[in-house]
Length: 88
Image (cartoon, rainbow, N blue to C red; front, top):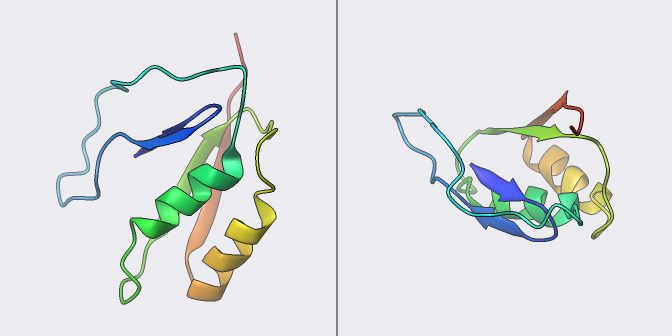
């Protein structure tokens, strides 16, 4: 689990027990570095393993361009799914 706002941080490493209860770190909600978050998530998947990434986001990105990270995922055969959320 990678939380992201202005910066991205690993909240929980991949494991056989994929339960996640809540985020522990505070996020700077004034920024959304989706590109960095994708890079961090992709780095958690070993090169010799299959994987997928689920992005839960309001769709705004004002950090690095996420397209290079998405292309890297595609090149590795890693599926990236998105679930939109609205900001309160």
